[in-house]
Image (cartoon, rainbow, N blue to C red; front, side, top):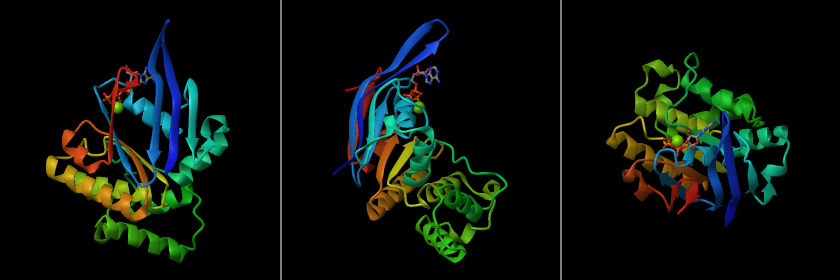
Length: 224
Ligand SMILES: Nc1ncnc2c1ncn2[C@@H]1O[C@H](COP(=O)(O)OP(=O)(O)OP(=O)(O)O)[C@@H](O)[C@H]1O
Ligand SMILES: [Mg+2]
C-alpha cells in the first residue's frame, strides 16, 4: 500500500543572480514496510529530495502526500507535529547530544514527539528499543565513550523510539567501515520489517543496495 507520495516536486535555489533548478519534477511513491534506496551522483539532488519529503524544507512546486494528506498545504505547526511524531531521522553522522547519556537521548526524543507515556512506560520503551539495537548495556554511557557503529545504533534507536511511520536516512552508513555498515543495514532492515516502518534511504554505497526493496536512481534533478 502506498503511504507516501511525491508528486511533480521541483526545487529551485537562487544563488546570487542565478536560479538553479535542483529538482525538476520528481514523482515517487513509497510502499508501506518497504526500504527504498535513493542513489545517484553527488549533486544530483538526493539530500534535497529527502529533506523536502521529510518536511525540513519546502518544495518550490508540487505535492507531498503522507497517508493521503497534502503536507504541502499544511501550516508549519502541522508539519512540525507530523515530523516529530510520525517521522524518524538518521543522518550520516549520528548527531547525538554530547552531554546526554544514551538513555537521555531517547527520553528527549519521546518528549519532542509528545508521546504520551508514563515515566515507567517510557523507561520500558527505551529499554526495549535499546535491546533491539543491542545497546541496553550502554544506556548510561555518554556518546564520547561509544564507537562509531555504537553511536549509529543509538541514533537508529532514537529515530524509532516514538515508532514513526516513515524513517528518512541520509547516508546512514557513510561514516562506518564495511562490516559495521552491513551490521547497521541488517539492523535497519530487521527493524523496518518488524515495526512495518517505511524507509527512504540515500546511499552512495553499492554494498547497501541488497538491503533495499527498491532502488531509485537520480540524475541531474530527475529520477531515471
Ligand atoms: N540551500 C541550498 N542553496 C543553494 N544550493 C543548494 C542548497 N542545497 C543544495 N544545493 C545545491 O543543490 C544541488 C543538489 O544538492 P544535494 O545536496 O541534494 O545533492 P546530493 O545528491 O545529496 O549530493 P551528495 O551525494 O554529494 O550528498 C547541488 O548542486 C547543491 O549545491
Ligand atoms: Mg547528499
